[in-house]
Image (cartoon, rainbow, N blue to C red; front, side):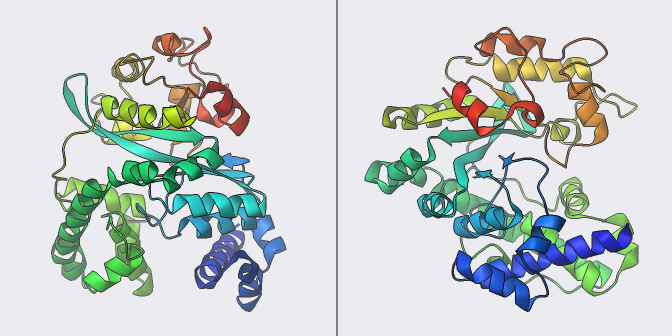
Length: 377
């Protein structure tokens, strides 16, 4: 089992490096062969469990690939469609990614992951909603227009503020985590390169650079404390290594404004409540024994879906993510996989926002392109 896991990691890294070195999709497989792999091996080792993965990031928030490179990854592993949901950002270059996806016979669904700072008169952490826009080709046409480019500029100020936050986090991580533990500090050039040389420079990229230092120096003592990037990110926030983001608080009214900006161009959208496991870890919706505070979670869902059900109708709750723990999955779906907990539907309050009397479906069961289109508002 361990050997298989190591081989899967090796193949994934080979694909990553082949994509980063390629000028076009046609260069990817030759690049794989140079690294001891090919597309057949990639599709055996990295075969997706779902046909449509709606939640992914690029260099325009906190990931490694450009839009086109992400499409090459999709094509290589055998996905049918992918959603691009960068954090609070849409860049006009997404039009080129949509074109490349069409050329290669896959689908890129444009969108963004929007952070909610205030809801119901309260400040929140860890509240994020996913927006997806349909049809993709019409969205590409829109962002190529002057009005579409102006639409994308609304995110530029927040991106610059996030970069300032990223640089501040770098200084804190160097001074309070890396250097005290005998690890080399991260340089500005290194972080800028890891961020794709574009704004925003996200603090989450520091987790990758930190983890790589632990592996390169074989620091098993640190790897036991920080086995993955999520553990490092949690530590960064708990220890105050990430400075506050000095940006105006975002609300669901801003989500409604985004949806209304694209609607006149024939573009529909769906709204998803993203990774609810962070409601427990970041929003503190837990009891003293560490278990989930189900009544509080129900109240939060009610706040989200009943805020303005016509302007911001919630269609899905994201449960497909590997970041959801088994406890989180059971909380929202129950042991049988239905939307129930302890015999009671946890999504009773979601009914007014759906076109039918059924509870809001979970993304793991219901989020496919056809269903999303039918629910797009």
